[in-house]
Amino acid sequence: MTSTNLPVPQPNAGRAARLRHLTRRLATDLATQLSTQPPTGRIVAEARSRLHQTISRYRDGGNADDATAIRLSMDLRIIRVRDEAWLASQAEPIVMTALLLDVAERIELAFLAPVGSLLAYTAWDQGEREVARRAVEQVLAAEPFYSMALLLQMALHFQVPPGRVRDHMPTLDEIDIRMGRPEPGWLQPLQWTLADYLDAAC
Image (cartoon, rainbow, N blue to C red; front, side):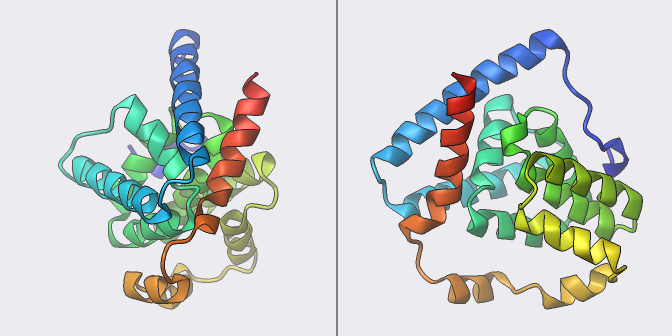
């Protein structure tokens, strides 16, 4: 499985219906959990753990079940988690491309932006500029102001070498210093996405 699979193929009607049902259940459960204002650090730690466990599974030649893949797409709405996935995409582009494509095949449009942007990055970083451009277009068609996709669109337009972006990416320790301790605002993009998705699904 390579990034040339983009744009991501859609599942057949029966499987798509099952995935929609599972997505709504997971989104409802997560929105309910977040409404109780759980400790942000716990939510972020669980999301990071899920990300690393999933990467390890793909590194060993396995894959994620539907619930894990869908939940991971929600986790990536947390910027701290997405940036960690971004760094993993630099360190293990083949593994991350396989993981992200597998996730993208199972998620609904509301959760595409971080997954699609990370796919665009891995394609661009591996020299597949046209694939990266298509992925960025797909993300921005769904979410015109998603910042990572806009950054990649600008880099592609001005033909910035991927290495220049890679060289300016902070390390995990630097990200932790810049972002500080987890705070409730970290979860707002996820909460807004869940609310919009569940409203539209009614």
